[in-house]
Image 1 (cartoon, rainbow, N blue to C red):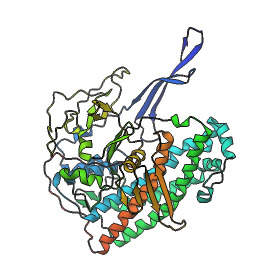
Image 2 (image 1 turned 90 degrees about the horizontal axis):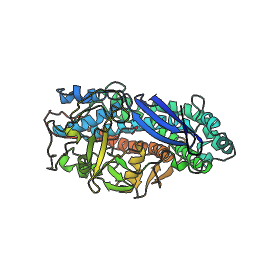
Image 3 (image 1 turned 90 degrees about the vertical axis):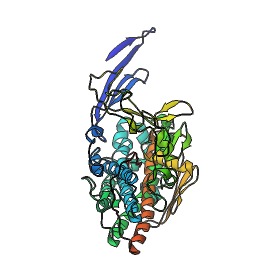
Length: 495
């Protein structure tokens, strides 16, 4: 700890603090900061990762048809998403279009993963920050206020006061925390017939899905999904009550986690009626996705064109332990449509690791700096996912392209119609584009995205069941390995 004397002889306490590793999610993140506790100000902050993965090195020479089995090991949380994008890439490269049932199988597995991921992330990781055990130690006056604040939607979720909600979120003892652990189990069961996690998804492949999808498969999925629908109808109003209270109880809390609305969403859930995995048509079928792709810069929706989005990607070295590849071979000069491809595009990236001592003024991480190039301003923008759901819903709402059973994007909101389920009546929800991107709104978006993912699943399940009943039970198609510069885009559940 250092003490600095100011001209007024006021003692300013500045402390260096480190949190490394941060294990709430994956364990490879480190935060190192210099904090002025006297003036309550962070003076310096660095984020690091000290894990070198090297997949893009040892993947060289691998048979492309094996890539989805290997890349699924990149992450222990969202491995199936890496597998999915690898298969989407191969579909394009090999010129293969899965049967409709195969495309619906992809969507059903991914939406089930979303339902699992958002539930356990929200109420077993994230909302622990708002639970009674945390608040009574950090903001006791807020807890006292919560004890005397009625929950506006108590008739739906069953918790009379805001403090009751906080108690329900206590780790390992709270009723809603424990319920969510149970929900995580049966939502994961909906992935099993289609993906076989946690090992490399053995039934997913370029050309579709090798799983035997039957009426029974669909029925079992439906039973679990409608059970989840009951849960969602309670969790969204409960989170709304909690987050709205937080704004009221702590004026200025909207600045917590505030960042510019610079967002990126690659889109999710292809519509089998339109997708052909042809790069030349990617603009059109990308906009038909059930989650719209797009880039927002400064709160403005810049594009929803996947071709343009692809060409805007730049990989910069930043503060990473890598050498530049500017003098290496350029693999792709133009994309399949003839558009120029930049040297710093991922297609041209060469991984040249250079381990060295950590230096906060130069190199200190194994993570490079992906950026979006904004040609309007000649600027490289650090667009983020807003945790995933925030960017997905923001882009989808603003684009106004999604108009399907149960879901409609209006230009400023997303309207969701949750049908009658076992224990709850039909319910309408509407997620509105918030005035800012901050911690609370990213959490709120994840809660609403539980409903969004469930409704996409319901739509795809109804379509898949129609295919099965019509006798179109093939979910995969043979593919032949071919050379090509191709790409696959999808959204990972966790963001």
